[in-house]
Length: 199
View 1 (cartoon, one colour):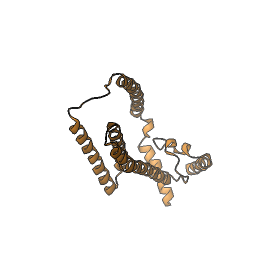
View 2 (cartoon, rainbow, N blue to C red):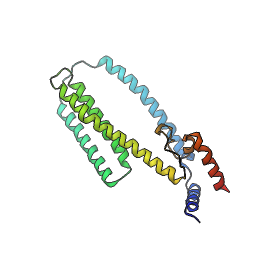
View 3 (cartoon, one colour):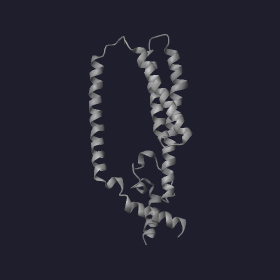
């Protein structure tokens, strides 16, 4: 058997041994529950934002200000350390850690600027956000996106799909239906190859 035939046979055997996750009833139930949770969270959060806008005082003195900021910076330090470790060890969790660290950097920039509005420290906070936190966050989000696209590209290559990697919003969560996310000019070739492999 050629290496391509062995890969094809291995894929066929894997589909026999391991049913696709989308055909698992528990996975379907968890998906429906997750969708309900996400949609419900949007409704609750929108209502909570309205309550906060109407009830929060314009000025507030916090007793644990230092603990809040130092704790946040410890979380950011942990995220940076985890990201560095995952990059060094070349682990898939790097994608998640890049996203988490980038998000924490955006939050840090937001709170620094908003909380320093009207004070003499505002320009330092704006400079820190514009020249450090937001560019670093952008680099991390870009790297995470690139790693996801590379991972999808590897899967496509292993599946024998020669098309370019589609936009992330078009790629299905699981490999099933990946060909449907491809441009039409590639789909016909994939169907033809599948028919040939079946005979």
